[in-house]
Length: 108
Image 1 (tube, rainbow, N blue to C red):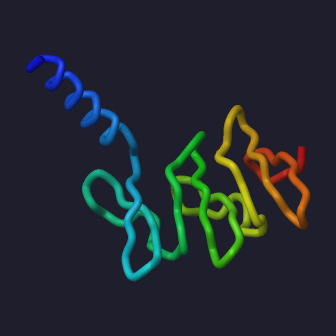
Image 2 (image 1 turned 180 degrees about the vertical axis):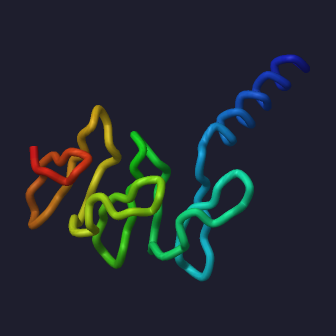
Image 3 (image 1 turned 90 degrees about the vertical axis):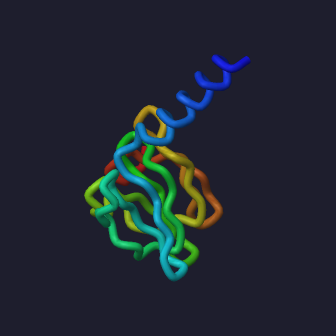
């Protein structure tokens, strides 16, 4: 029992610290810091999500888009709903219609 608890704690710790960037929330806005605690992407988003395939879903107002790990907007916040990226594609909803986009924002 003692070893299994130790292994489980080790797995959780490794999983938590395997990321390069960590979400922060300051005054109702979200951004990202690195392992040293330095702000890498300022807290300027209403909501920020974890990175998947090197892009993070962000929410500004009522719209969603994506940023890269340097904070550059890759897909502007223009969609009413989005999924995370999987195999290079994200399902997005705009004007009541769902479709896929690639990591540049091009419709597929």
